[in-house]
Image (cartoon, rainbow, N blue to C red; front, side, top):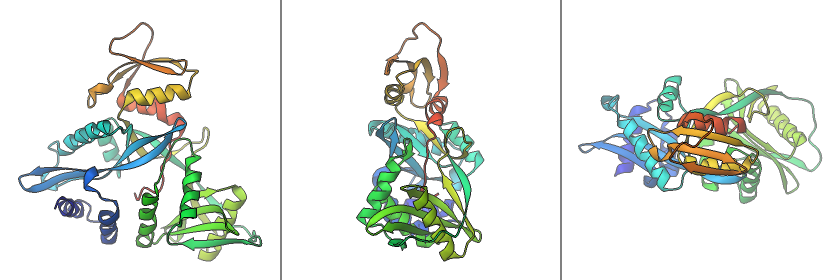
Length: 338
C-alpha cells in the first residue's frame, strides 16, 4: 500500500521526527489523492504531499498547495527525482485550479534548492516579548485551556484569520490536526470568554523554559493582554515570546516560500485589487512554460500577450514575480506543524 511505503520512506529520511507525530500525520493529514511518488522497480524512492490550504489574497480566497514531506531515499539523491516530482506537482496543481504553491524550507540550503524551482521567500513574521502585568481578570471573564475546538471556537478562529488580507487559512479539519498534535509537542491552547462570547484564542509551544505564542487572535488588545497574562500566571512565567504578522515597514523574519502556479489568474486578481497600477511585465517560467509571456496591467485589468508590445517592461522570472506581487502584502502563515 502506497501510504505505508511513503510512511517508511519518511521515517528513513526524517529520523529525528517524533514517532507519535509521524503516526498522527499519516492518520489525519496524509491522503493518497495529494501524494506523488516515484518508484524504482517495486520501491518508492521519492515522495511529497501537496496539502490544500485556502488563502486570502486581494479581497478573495484562492486555492494553494503546501509541499509537505518532500523526501528522497539517500541512495537516489542528486539524480533529479525531486525535480521531477515538483514538475509533476506543478502540472497537477495547475489542472486543479491551484494558484500558489507554498512550503517552509528546513534549512538555508533547501531554500536555495527550492528557489531553483521558482519559489521566493515571501512569508515572514514579526516577534515580540509580552511581559506579564498585574491586570486582574474582569468579573464574568474566564480563560480556559482547550484540548479540542468546538464549533463556536473554530468559527471564531476562522473569522479572525480571515480578517488578515494575505494569509494561509485553516479549515476545520486542519485545526483538528493542529489540536491533536499539541500533546505530542507539549503545547497548549487557550480561549478567553466573557459569558458565552469568545474574545480571544491563543496557541503556545514550549521554548526552552518558557512558551512561544504561535498564534494569537483577539477582539482587541485588552482581550489579548488578559489572555496572555493569565497564561503567564498559570505557567509561572514573567513573559512569553509572541509571533505575529509584520505591520507596515516593520522588518519580518523569513519563514515560508511561495511559487506562482497560474500567473494569469494571480495577476488578474492583483490588477483588480490595484487599479492604479500601470505596468508591463515580461515573465519567464522554465518549469511551467504556460506562464511565460507578456502581461499588461492597467485600470484594474490584466491583458496577456504572447508577443511583446511597445513600452518598457519589468523583466521577471517566476520567483521574481512572486516577490513583486506578494512581498508588499506581508503574506502570513502559522500553525503549519513545521
